[in-house]
Image (cartoon, rainbow, N blue to C red; front, side):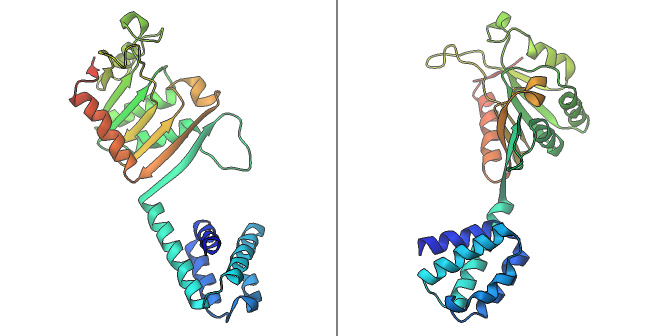
Length: 253
């Protein structure tokens, strides 16, 4: 049964709802796995034919009435699409890519989160240089009334771990934004750095990445991350960052 469930799940997770409905209807017309040749017309692409082959093979090993298999397939597809609608996770990658896996670029993902913000936007980064496209998007967000908050690593002149004064620069570039730093680093965090690279908009969308807010990170470095829409992660992330402010773990400049 486990192999059959796995085959059902693979089709449900990789097939449009209308094609799932077509397959379910065709399965109901089949008496048993031995007479399943009529299903072959459903699959056109090679990868779809292979998934169908696995399904039929597992069905032969675990014979069920055709109406039950059709119902299981429809139910699995419905559950998958409901879960996907509530939370969608997308791979983000900058650097050399392959044609085998579709990915989004780091800059594209970050711009999408900024543009999605209507009320609040929170960004954290270790290093922050002036990336023109990102700064333009942040300025536009500020102009439309978005409350922008940033947590950045302090310069070494101010007890931090970077040579440039990213905080001072951001204050000048985005005077309406709220800039925070991690100053009091008592044990066990003595010597710690703001190394998180995240962006979250309105508790609805967030971007978690290895990339700093720099031109090299946006265009040249090999960077990886995930863009998350919906679900509990953007909510928890935004609330955690704001809790750091409330508890005075981080301080406003």
